[in-house]
Every structure is written in C-alpha cells, then in structure tokens.
Image (cartoon, rainbow, N blue to C red; front, top):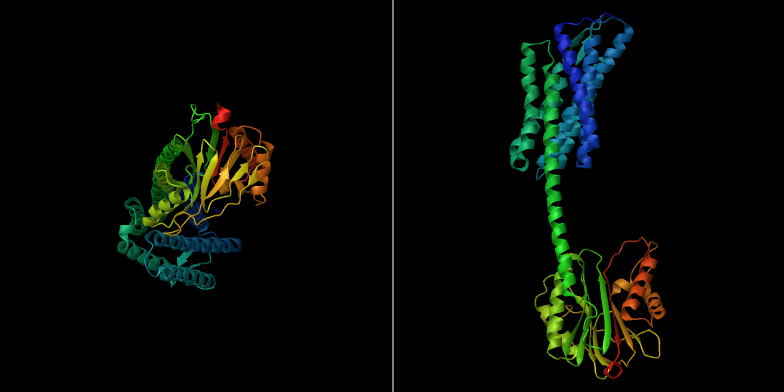
Length: 488
C-alpha cells in the first residue's frame, strides 16, 4: 500500500495524534477524579471516547483514501460509517448536556425526545448512504467524494446547533458564566474551523477545533465541580464545628458532674446520655427544689438533631422553672404543656416523667406524660417495672389534665428511669432489646451503685446491638435513696 504524505497530511496526522492522546489522558483523569459527580464522570468518559473514535476513524480514512482494492473498499466504507456515526452522537451528547444545564421550565422531556429523533434520523440516513451515494461514495480507486445529499449528513447537527443556541440565549441566567463561555466556544469553534478549512482545505481545522473546545468545556465543568465541592466541604466543616459546639453546650446543660451534690448524703444519683446524632432530643435533669425535695426529670423529644435539641432546651427550662415554684408534679406537667402548646407551629412533642422526692420521708410524688415506665427496687426486693398511668405527651393538646401518684422509697431503694432508646435498641436482626432484657440487666447489678447499674445496662445494650447503628438517643438515670437517718 502506497501512502503519500503531503505536508497537509503530515500536519493532520499530528493534529489527530495529539487529539487522541489528549482525549485519552482526559478519560484517565476523569476516571480518577474523586471529586467528580458520577454522572459527570460517565458523561465525559463516553464523550471523549466518541471524540477518539471520530478522529481515529477520520485519520484511518485519510490514510486509506485513494488506495485500490476490494478489501480497502470494505474497510474504508466501515471506518467512514463509524466516523459519521460518532460525529452524530457527539452532537447529540453536547446538546443533551446543554439541555440538562439550562433545564427549561417546560417541555424539557419533549426537547429530549426531539433530540433523540434527530439522532435516529441521522443514523437511518447514514445506513441508507451505505447502499447509495447519498452522503458520500468512493470511486474505483477508493477516493472519497461527497454525495448528492451530503448536506443531509449535517442536518441533525445543524438542527441540534440551532436548538443549543436557543437554549443558551433563553436560559442564559441559569448557566454559570464559566460553563456558558465553554458551551459557546464549543458551539462557535467548529463554525470558525469550517471557515478556515474553506481557505486551507488540506488542514483539518474542524478536528483541532473539536478537540480544543471539548477539552476547554471539560476543564470548565470540572473546575466548577471542584469549586462547588470545596465550597460544600467548607460548609460541611463549618456545620461540623457548630454541631461539635452544640454537643458541648447540650452536654453542659445537663448535670454531668458526679457526685452531683457532695454535701448531701441522703441520696446517690447518676445519669448518662448517649445521643444518636451529634445532638439529641433526650434529656434528664435533677435539682433541689428546696432543702427537702429533689426534682427528677426524664424526657424524650420527638425527632432528632438540632431541632429536637432546641425543643429539649425549652422543655427542660420550663419543667425546672415550674418545679422550682413548689408545684405538684401534675401541676408542673399541666403548666409546661400549656406553655409548649402556645407556640408549637412545628407540632413537636415531648414525653416527660417528673418526680419530686421528699428527702426526709422518701415519699416520691410523680407524674407521667406519655413516658416509659419507671423501674423500682425496694430495699428487700428486685428491680420491677412500675406500670404507672400515662397522660398525653407534652405538646400534644392544650388543656390536658394530668394525674400523679405516690411511690415510697425507703432507705436502700433504687429508682431507674430511661428513654425508649434503651428498650427499643435494635440489633442487626431487627430485634428489640426490650424491657425484659433491660430489667434483667438491672437485676444483675441491683446491689451496685447507680453508676455501676447504668454501666451494666449500657454494656448489655451494646452487647445486644453489636455493630448495628444506633437509631435513638440512649438516656438513663438511677437514684438510690439513703435517707437522712441512714446518712447520719
């Protein structure tokens, strides 16, 4: 095979070789880009692969042009078909990208179907051209010639180009400036190249323009993606910092120094909270209402995260304020419910167990607003659930009346209260930990200190849950009543 190499062909070979190399490197870069969205990565992998196929087939056709032989004829017809086919798909893909970025308000799906129809028409006409002289033909020595209907080979590309221009003009405010410039370059560059090629017919400016415009468009989109990723990372870091601060603030609002009242010997108390997220909606509290009464609170706010934490803070303050007035538990719950219902546009609610322990007599007055059953151990007994009467959750409905009940805690008695995150802890088999396992864990450590009791329950929950994720806050409190006589 005699291949003549004119200066024009030599330049074209260099242009095509550089184009193939640059597009190949771009495909590898896209594949390794960790900050590139998967759909963008797939798009450019396919797009650059099409460009490589297009310019490779173009080079192959040029190298075989004018070489006689039946085998050459079959080969040159095949590569020319693939070249024209790749060209149509390239025009279709850039049009779909512009359609995606501009995102028209109406008719987006119809425009996509229109583009697909144009691509289908291009493919059908190209197949017809294989058996006629519609787009192109090769003479007896396999020299390339344009057919009588060659203009039709550019019909789909021209209509797609017009649609692209209309979208870019109409929805220009939706396209980032850098990407808009890249799109316009890709649209205009081939037209300029066609004009230059009309003057210098031997140089394939159209290939040079296609590769250069594609690389610029790729770099613009990737740069936009990278900057957006960096901005998202900065925002994520800022949120992480704020959440960490919120976690510390929330932890500091709960009693977390033990022994909590070193000067008081009538009781021994310990509590813990393990939020499912950075900040949680559960809360516990204990405080001296007066010198003779200890207020104890266990509550669980609906929802998770920052909203629940904010609602938790409001609820905690209200409970403590009304309790500090010396009101009975049912009155505390009724007043807190009234205040919550006044301004509760988000329809959040909180379950609350509140008790007031007389440090002289061990009498515990308590009220339950939709919370879990407490667990009591009498001095000579074992931990058992106290199935108290539940009222409606706080924030559920205004004007609710609550009841209260009395428990006697003699010296040596222990009370355990908790949120549903304990009983509803779930393992990988989606089994619940349940109150039976919880009570059993309490009984295993019932003669230990409140801190050791909580540690036993926590260990039992962790062993049961295993590697399954924590879906709910895990909050517990245990108090042992010693009594003043025993303390003295």
